[in-house]
Image (cartoon, rainbow, N blue to C red; front, top):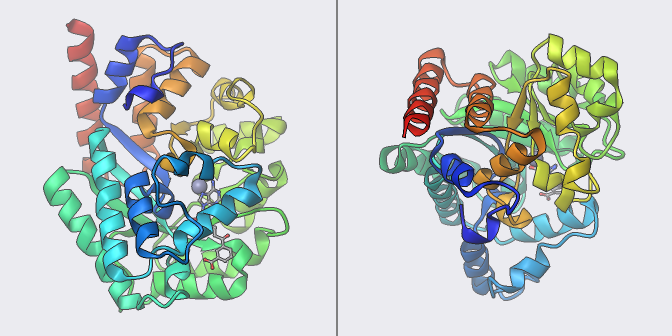
Length: 353
Ligand SMILES: Nc1ncnc2c1ncn2[C@@H]1O[C@H](CCC(=O)c2cccc(C(=O)O)c2)[C@@H](O)[C@H]1O
Ligand SMILES: [Zn+2]
């Protein structure tokens, strides 16, 4: 964990424990993970962009007034990615950042529509992410898998295109495991995406839409009913509906909780008001994730530290949280068992020292 992210309310040795803890990351966006160095390098290559070329200036640029402002800034960074080589470099560097935090397995949310509509050749795009995935696994030991998401606000044309890219056997990348829906929720009702999720699910993909991040619990119900969600991205507003919480707990539908993101996009007022405690109290399977870490001034280690403070967790509690991430992942059973073993071995050695 970088020094500026050390939470003064979390003991130093707990930070050290988190840094070495093997983890799974289930909710992290491809473009939203571009490091300040990569973003400023790309911005320097494209002087027509409004994105600052100075990494220090990015801190201000990445301060959001509301969710719509966040999406506006996000798309300005998407605009910087113009070639398959940009895509490959970005993906490879994201894997390096994850490996540094002992992330053994990550499901990276990618929005292929945003790249293909900007003129990147679709086959070259797939080759770039796959090439980076294989290099990252060989060099860092981090296993990457993809979630292709529909940018809902871009309309049903984007849904059709994303579904085609995810299900056409000639294009579909080997690492693709799931299908999502992202972007603003207001005015973007979930049920209209049912036919696209039906096709993706029929093609063997898991359903992991964002829901209840910026709208109420009905959106989460809709994601469950119409999109057959197996996990929920954020699901923050589920806390407003005790029946929904009970349903999520009973069906073991995990929530992909990203605490700092919710504050940065102003979906939640403050960390102390974050509903993560209600989720845990209701018995919901909580996973901890980072969403768009450099844009939100965080990383996965810091999100675990935030969770430790909000849920009052010690090392064993943090290890259990890391195991939730593994359990909720779409990794195969032997792969899950390997990471769980690693978490147990690491925790036992830490507590014995
Ligand atoms: N916290 C988040 N919550 C939700 N989504 C998040 C979050 N973080 C990152 N995203 C990403 O933002 C994208 C938004 C892209 C989008 O809305 C859009 C609209 C119109 C045109 C185009 C285009 O490309 O031309 C794109 C989503 O697909 C998603 O992957
Ligand atoms: Zn997200």
